Length: 62
Image (cartoon, rainbow, N blue to C red):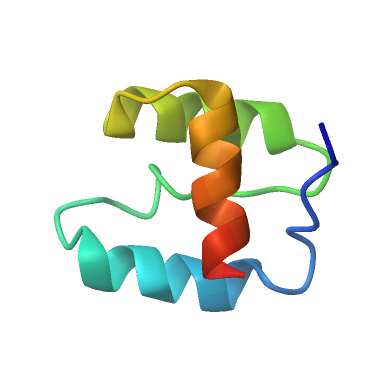
């Protein structure tokens, strides 16, 4: 799998996610450089989807 390129684009992507999922908190969407796997795990739990589905979804937002 390609490594997600979240650095630099995350704030824009986070805004799009918040528009779609208004009940998600900043903690749900917290991203720190080098913590991609942690973020993906939280998003998997929130969405109830497999890791690859979450990655594809994020790539579609970027």
